[in-house]
Length: 315
Image (cartoon, rainbow, N blue to C red):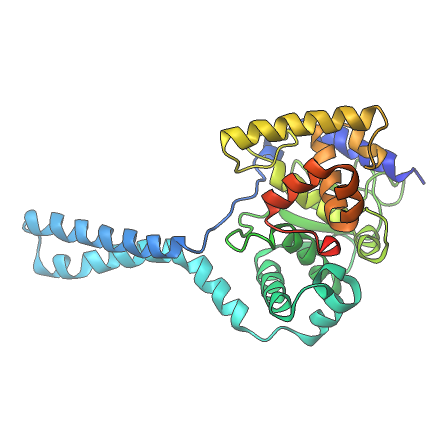
C-alpha cells in the first residue's frame, strides 16, 4: 500500500493538469440578504412590463396578466432555492443523523446549543442539495452526514455562504488508482476530477473524523473548491479584494518556501505547491489549530479571517 503522502501527491499532479471541465467546478455563494433584492428586481420587472404594455396600447388582458406573470417568474428564479432550503431547515433533524454528529464530529460537539442547531440545519440543506453516489459502495446516511459535515465546517463561520452548483460526490469503497479502480493499485483517497466530481474513499473519510492526526480528506477536497476561481487553482481562496488577494499570495508563497526548507509543522504534502499547501493548512486549521496558531500565526489568522471563525479546538 503506498504511503499517504504518495497517494495525495499523485492526486495533486493530476489536478494540476488543469482540465477545462475540472475548472468549471467551483464554489458559488448565495447571500441570503439578496432575497430582498430579488423581490425588488421582480417588482421592477413587473412595473416595466406594465408600463411598456400600457404605452403600446396592448389589450387589457395582457396589461393585467403579463406584469405579475413576469414578476412572479423573476421572483421564482431568484428565490425558489432559498425558499426550498428554508423548508428543509424547518424539518425535524433526524435523530440518527444527530447521533452520527455526536459520535464523529468533534467540531459539532464543541459548539454551543444554538450553533449546533444551525450546524444541523446546514447539514440537512447540504444533503438535500448534493448528489452523492456510491461506486460499488453503499452510501449510508452516516456517510452522507460526514460528507456534509466536511463541507459545512468550512463555511460555518460565514452564514451568508452556501454551496451551489456542487459537483457530484462519488463515494468509493476503498482507495483507488488513477483509473478509479479499487482492485489494483490503491493510490488515491480523494480527488477533484475532470468530470466535475469529488471522489472520496469511504474508509478514509470515516478515518478523517476518528483520528487525532491533522488529516481530513473531506476538508482537503472541499478546500480545493474554495481555491478554484477564474478557472484556476493557485492556493489563494476566492472572493477576496485585490489588496487581500495580494497579501494571501505573498503569504502562501512564503509558507511554501518555509515548508520546503523544513521549517513548518505542516505535513510534507504541503511542500507540493501552493494549492496543496492551502488545502493542508485548512486541514490543520480544523484538526490541529493550536499547533498551527503557535507555529504559523499569520497563516492561522488569515484562515480565521477568511473563514470567519476560530477553529473549535482553539477556542
